[in-house]
Length: 577
Image (cartoon, rainbow, N blue to C red; front, top):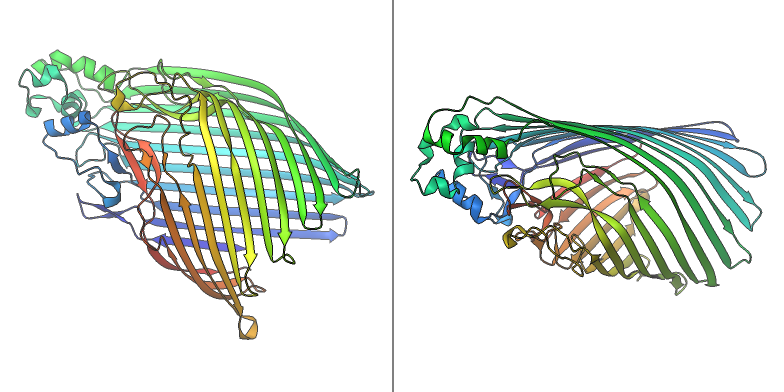
């Protein structure tokens, strides 16, 4: 059994009330039981549990002129959009809780003639509960609550056999059932009406002030989104390896899968007060409500797909220390249903993604296995690539459509990767990994535009794929030295570097991550034979600024970044029971 607990103080300052946000508080365990009544049968039960209860907050990386004008209208000056200053001003609490539980039962029955029958039964559930200040300002514009509940059960049966040294095979069937329930509530506050009208010409030209805008136009109103998806997956698969000679191995494989999905989403609005007889209510109150809140909405969809995918791999032992291989595969990711309110720019369903990949490489050992070098060249062509979209809003008052998946026409990923290891002495080892990746949209002429372009559809064909740095480098030095009584001193220094990339599909201003590198240090002592260790560590030693993710936020053109962990020092205790 293994147990973990992670605790870290917050690293973002909430200037509104002095709280420290973005702390970490995580606990969990993983354990297993093995029963072997005889040499021909074994049963392994594996369980895990993980709890997360912390505040996760985005810091603004870009604010549009529209948001700044709206904030100025209600008398608020936003903080500069600088996520690495690690400061926000928010009057509503932010909380994130997740709970994950899993149970797996593996049964192995060893039959005659080297035949093995394996059963894998698994259950997993995951719940997510978040409360967020949706406007990310010390204003009562909007707050949101999101609840997700996911349950799944899977069953796999495999039959494996080795027929001498020349041939072995695996045959199997697979079943997966999933259920997702999604509940989202958005509540509007006293500043919402004035804020959303703050950049409207018909308001500013008439000399209307925030005090003339009735808060009741939106205050107390709530949007309730309810949705869910049921999915069933069945598959049969088979793979065999044929060794016509001692050096040559040929491995073909096929998989046939059947996907069925059913999803639905509804929107309901509550808490609206009657429109007043004042100028603002009569001038644009109904339109404001229609755009900011929308009306009743309901949609249900079904997806049914069948797919045949496969692979062919060939490897050849060129010498005792050198292996060459080539692999071709045809992959598949099922389509699905968007559980958001969709408009003209986003389809309610998205198609399956299909990828054709080719890889050629070598694996080699040198200097009496003191060094190794693996090199691979690959290319993957993807049709109907699935990507998360933040599309343009239907109107200047409404937020962008978020969290919706669309299909990109064609994407190509190709590059070269090299991984090496060198044992410098009996105590010191060096690692190096280098990757050059050319990931591009080959055909994407109807892509969402960056918000600042004021366009509806843009051509991103030939552009770099988002979240795909061109260069990646990782290297490190490991040190191990035996001590007395079976103890061992160990340490490492690690460095990882990535070139620049956009963090969102539409490449909006404020979503670009420049090149950065991170350095980590570790030093500890332990006993590997007993599975325990005490380790001191320092992460992001030189306090490099970087974002781990970018997201579109309240208004069109607004982006928030999740700042990466700053320099931190801590201690880890590891044990095995």
